[in-house]
Image (tube, rainbow, N blue to C red):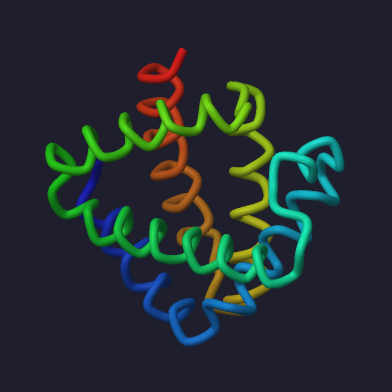
Length: 137
């Protein structure tokens, strides 16, 4: 992964951190809008979804920070992917998650979500999801 790609993702994620709870809500709203069939894979209560949103943002923060040491990040992603199989996640869901993630970043970052930032996030998510899919399936 190119250093500029990592820098763009890490710097833009710093702007997401202050709005993490809202970003998580946006993400799940977009995810369920893109594929309503995914909703049963998640908790039904509002409180449990807030917890889920916190987990999402914590995992994203760790993954974004881990881009600086991809060799250490890969086994973490592989383990995460294997756990997601137990949650009934299918390979096709990764595309939907990627679209929801990009949509969330676009909404959350506004004008800071430049074409370069979008490409960087798409590239990073593509690598991460490929690692996860390969490990799980």
